[in-house]
Amino acid sequence: MIEVVSQQRCIECGLCVKVCPTNVFDRTETGLPVIARQEDCQTCFICEVYCPADALYVSPFADMEQKVTEEELIAVEIIGSWRETVGWGRGRTRLAEIDETPFIDRILPRRS
View: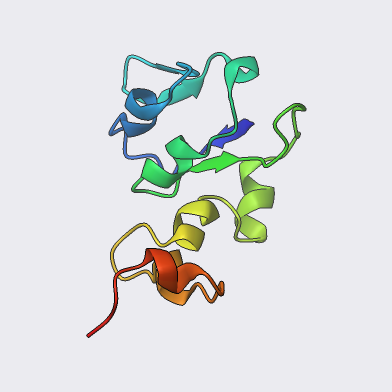
């Protein structure tokens, strides 16, 4: 469930608002997204992955609110971490590049 929108990191691009399939966010007059309908969050992580500023935190707990602060998430380097984990963003290793699942060679194109 979406838990945090970092006011310090957010660049007010609105991508999280646009990609959210359940319309969880509203935008303030300044363009900053706010969590308006948290209970509608499907924990799909799309907003966190699309956020170019790593300004969002989606908790993996889909059915319960997790009370966390931005400061706590920064201290443990977890805010925006899903985007890095899956390899979105320039200079990051894509998850598929390091996947060692035995069947992965059946679905990935052959390397020359």
